[in-house]
Each structure stands twice: as C-alpha cells, then as structure tokens.
Length: 268
Ligand code: UGY
Ligand code: MN
Image (cartoon, rainbow, N blue to C red):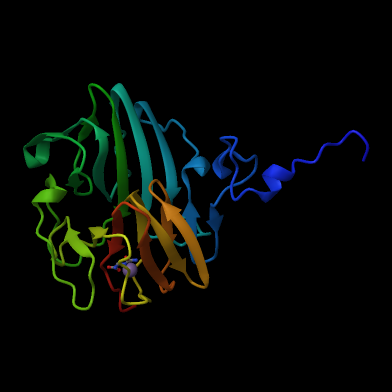
C-alpha cells in the first residue's frame, strides 16, 4: 500500500466536489430494461441515419420488437439545416411533436402546409404522403403506430399544447391536455401532463394501454412495477400493458411529460 495516498475528503463528502457528476462516471447510467418497462436516459440514446431521412439523425427509444411487444414506435430526431424525414412504412400513422427549432409540415392530401415551433404538433394519417423538413434545424419527438381502424379514417391534425383545454380528471391534481380528438377514429392519444413539485398520481395505475413517455421538464420519482426510479427531463420510459405505474414530482421546477397512450381495446 506504500505510495498510495487515500482521498479521505472525497470519501467523506456528500457528493463529488470536483465537477464530475454521476452521468460522467464511466459505465454509470440510470437506464434499465425490464420485461414490462424500460428507462432510457439521455446518455443511452444511440443516434443513427435512417433510409429516406436527409441531414438527420434519429434515436429510436421504443420499437415493436419481439422483446418489447410494443405496439408503437417512439423516436427522437434531430434535423440539421435543410434536413428532412423519410416516409413511415405503409399503413403507419405518425405523430410529431416539436421540441426545438422550426419544422415545415406539408401534407398535400390534407391541403396542409404548416410551420411548427416548440410545443406544436401534427398528426399525419397512414399512407398520406408528406414532407417534414427544417430550414434551420429542429429537435423532434415522434410516435408511429400501425393504424387500427375501428371508426372512420383519422384526419390530419395540428395545433399547439397551450391551445388545448385542461381536462378534468377526478381525484387527480395534475393538469391534463389531450392533443388528439377523443373519438374511435384515433387509435392512440398524446397526453401532456403537468405536475407542481410535490404533486403525484393518486391512482397507482395498472391498465391495458401501453405508454411511451418523454419527461420534458422537471424531476421526480417514477415507480414502475416494484422499482422506483429517480428521473429528470430528457428521460424516456416505455410501459408495457399492465405495468404498475406511479409518478411523484419533486425538485424545484414543475414536471411536464408527453405521453403516448393507445386507445384500442381488442376483445380478441
Ligand atoms: O392516462 C394515463 O394512463 C396516465 N395518467 N398514465 C401515466 O401518467 N403513467
Ligand atoms: Mn397510465
């Protein structure tokens, strides 16, 4: 042991005071993958180019592989100046939420030509040829799903979170907005949920619906099955059907998450 000098100060201090955070600790991550849920934190995203996408990188955080059994895709995308997205496969509908920058959305069949900014969104029905492009760059959250028609054909939608009404939820204190119409024409919805620090879900939810979640602001504790995860903005979560789920918002800033929820109940 000669020659080794022990750093007792670091051992005794509450946290590292040399500027090295846990996220920079080699090999350390809060990410985890379980049978019925996953937490994907920012340092675990794997960015790659995709066929059909130009000047763009995507990080697919959830996809319907045999391992997950998910019925939807959730991805983050970064479009560079002049970048554009590819078309989804046949029969696949797409929801895009702008996190950052400016996105041009053109859907000729819907006579739609929009410029979207942060907190704006668009829903593009399956098999609607469209262009998603950016002049000066954009950060996007996308959800895609093989369309299940149980009513009429869903229609193109677009808008902004702040323009959607807050919907009452009995017994809950969080603020809820739903970005898509609540009719059988749409086989999923996107919820935006806001919590003040200290607020939490009252219902310890267990339900058939699947979720893909992106925490876009704040921090707290997410309970999934029998595990309790400290989470912060940038974290993504996959929830399989029937996984127990609960959130408590903590810290100094309000929490907001954007949540995919499928709405088709197949009687088999
Ligand atoms: O609507 C929901 O299922 C939502 N409250 N779930 C969640 O926040 N985990
Ligand atoms: Mn839920």
